[in-house]
Length: 321
Ligand SMILES: Nc1ncnc2c1ncn2[C@@H]1O[C@H](COP(=O)(O)OP(=O)(O)OP(=O)(O)O)[C@@H](O)[C@H]1O
Image (cartoon, rainbow, N blue to C red; front, top):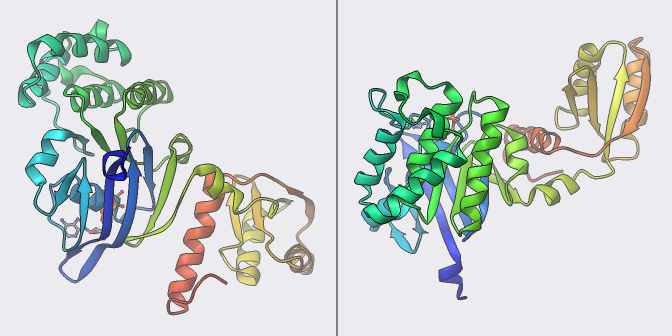
């Protein structure tokens, strides 16, 4: 397969300003067909702006992209027909039933009658919405609404599906249903580009990009991202975790220390880090009950990357240590 055919999304130097603010800047990215690509980052990092540019809704301020073989700028209308997009405020019609909503989107995308019935049944079945097919959308639970939104975005079997924080506030059972539907579509060759605030969801992606202040600061498989911290993460048990965190952040920097529930995670990249932490705590009269190595989670990686990016910014853009 040549690379143009196997690449679903490619962007080069993609950027967008709003007045003086660069919401997204210098975004280079390539997503292969059939990949599940996850975009994560704090509020305001530029995830929605990225999705809106790639779906042809928002004009680019700089750079170029190719989505489903169509160029940006230029191919906006062709892109809209080839993709599905579930935005944070996906438009379900509250006064239409579940199946009427599906039919509305099937009409909108001119799905042939022959294929639409089979697809409708499949999507209703996958999302466990068959028993509710005649219920008005306004009377669905939050999780059911999201699943119906997903079904509507998939009714025309898009080549690439863009999802903007699709499971925010959705219960765990509906989230599992949601991901089951996504995986079944991926098996049939659909490419997924999803922004999410949930790191367990990011773990389900084949690759994850971390955005911060409009820039993509890391992009790799979840496994490789976690491996960057392997062997260097310690869980500290103290009798005053909050106080200990404050003290250690002051002493070692926020990129090395974070609070997880009642424990501290310490990134011990230097052999002297634990000794420094131990003596700082002891001087402050805080007992260190245990310090054990633990495997890193994506959350550990992202907390550290964001703290490093903030520190670099404060230092005037210097590289990582
Ligand atoms: N239409 C707009 N007009 C002005 N500024 C905007 C507009 N859309 C986004 N921004 C700004 O661009 C930046 C990136 O916003 P964006 O919504 O892309 O971030 P995000 O990562 O999706 O965050 P969230 O999860 O909160 O939506 C923010 O500073 C935001 O205020």
